[in-house]
Image (cartoon, rainbow, N blue to C red; front, side, top):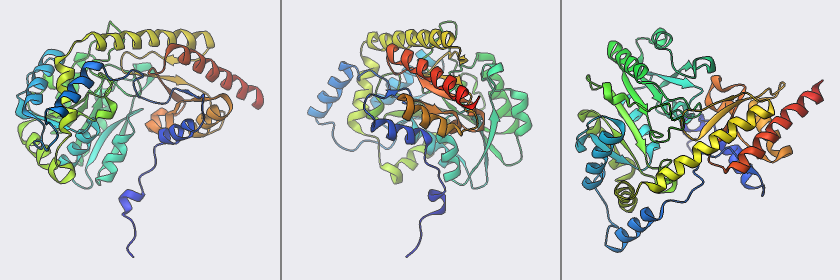
Length: 389
């Protein structure tokens, strides 16, 4: 009998999922590891999907998404993200994750290098490796607001570098790239003939009212930018699995072609739910954003009072907190916190080498849980220090 595929076997299991599974088996755990909005999908979206199902929208759709949805998305990116995109450049996918994977699939050859941030979204490392690419990490420092340095990035580029991946607003750092930086990154890719894959799924979740999200595609005169968005976090639609990529024509055509052997087409009912999200009232979306902003303030205040160093996020649902593990691995620290104090957080090691020394806390929990979870985290750090002294 033949063995299992080497690439698949070599893929490490997500440490966040390790915490997720153990926390799920412990009733009463304060869940701060999950990037899942704590709000239900707004009722008008659910009603739109139910109406579509009753009216026969239950069959296959086009590989790249329903024409009506793509037209609405073209209007959305122009209004919200500030750039124009013809509907033919938009490819609807079953979640932003599929849009990212298909983009790597379309653009990487074995041995190609991809510049990835650390701390950064961990699934990018796994995707690149599964497809035979080579991740090359660029480090983000808290002292720089976790923003990439174009000069240091340029020093990492080799003749095998094919793509730069960026994420703004960023998971896990919460950084929101200023417009001038985004323009510099696009120009860097232009100079070195690189693709720029920009993950902007948190585009409407800017928590610091002084910050503003700027899309990479605003500067894409050379047509090197592929941008990925999602309905999951902004609209509390994680389980509906609707994302989309905005890409240059040749790339969009290839992404549509890749949908057929992977999954045929995205869910038609979920796409009708997405249409309802775009056409419906904005009040539920604003209410969720206001709640996340209040929770951000609670997290900052509680961490400061507890003597913890928290990196205030400008956007997303996350914040990084610095911890001293006193010799334990980040995963073991997180497991000890869960087992001894009933709090589940994401260990920084899952976000690459730049995540060492941090844990990620999700603002998807309610304010009381965030407060108590951070207090227990501070207690765990102090207790561990006393044991070691």
